Image (cartoon, rainbow, N blue to C red; front, side, top):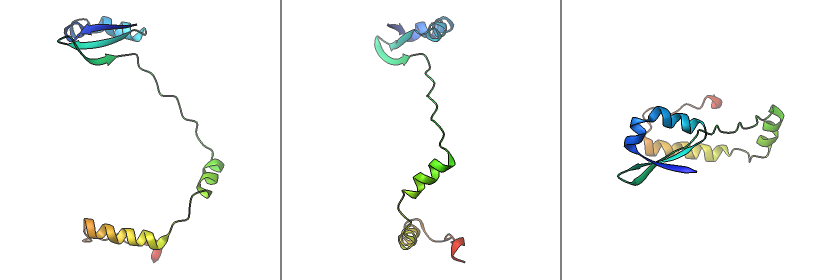
Length: 94
């Protein structure tokens, strides 16, 4: 069940209200009778399972190969937009 409380009540009774929220109660905070916020218990995000190295390698094998010519063209186009005062050096092309 959700209980409506005014902003002033939240300010004046915040310790008690926070104890009630911690116990699972939910509140709608109002200002001049209009709802402005929900005060609800925190719900921790479920942990995502970590992938193994083998699973990651299998995933990367499904990705398309990198088109080097397109990569270079994109970098040159970015230099036109952002300026080429200090162009990036491609360490792999040495």
